[in-house]
Length: 345
Image (cartoon, rainbow, N blue to C red):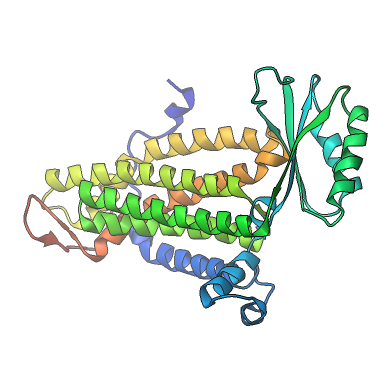
C-alpha cells in the first residue's frame, strides 16, 4: 500500500455543486479564449486576411485558418526525414547542431528502433523542412556524421509533401472528433443520455483547453500531440465512468436525497481514487518531461495539462451537468430535484 495514501482523509465532505456556477463560468471563458486563439493564429493574426489569402474551397480556407492557429511541426508542414544508423550511440544534440548548420528552420531529432535484423543497434530519425538545395543539405549532414559517431551513415531519405501533411492534420482532427463521439455513445448506452451529454461536454472541455494551450503558447504541434490528446480522452472518460458508476449506485441507494447532495456525495466517495490516480500519472509524466528529451517534451506537456483539466472536468463539468436535466431513479421519472447545495453526509 502506498504510504502517502494515509495522508488522505477517509471521508471528505466537500461541496462541489456549490461552486458549479463559478466553475461553469471559468470553463466557458477559458474555452472561448482557446477557440479564439485557434482561429486567430494564437491571438496574433487576423483570420479574415488568412481566409482571403488562402486558396481552394471555403472548407479548405477554414482549414488554413486553423493551421495558422498552431505552431505545426514538420509532420503537418511537410519536410525531409533522414534515417541515420550507427554501430555506436549517437549524440542527438550533436546531430541537431549539425543539421542546423546545414539547414535553417525547424529540426527534429528522435530515437527510433532499427527495423532490419542485421541493422546497426542505434538508429535516429532526423527531420527538417525541405529546402530547394535539399541534396546539398543531405550531403553536408552525411559528411559531418563521422565526427559524431564512427561508422554512422544515412540509411534512408524520405520526403513528405505539404499535401500529405495537410491530410495528416485533418485526419488527426477527425480522429479526435470520432473518438469523442464513440465515448459519448458508450456512456449513453451504459448509463443514460444525461450522462452521455455530461461526458461529452467534459471531453470537449479537456480537448479544447489543451488545444488552446498549444495555440496560445505556440508549443510545437506534431503527431505525438494528437496521440496525447487521444490518451487524454481515454483518461478523462475513465475518470468520468468511475464517478458515474458511484452516482448511479447512490441514485438507487438514496432515493430521497436531493440530486445536488447526491452528486456531492458521489464525488467525495471517489475523491481519494481520483487523487491517487492523477498524482501517479503526473509523477511519471514529470519524469518524462525532464528526462524524455526534446522529442517527448510536447507529449509530456500535453498529458500533464490534460490530466489536470481532466480531473477538474470530472468534478466540475461532467457530473454537475447532470443537474440541468435530472436523472431517473429506480425506473421512474427523471428526478430534477436540485435542492440547495449542502454538505454531503
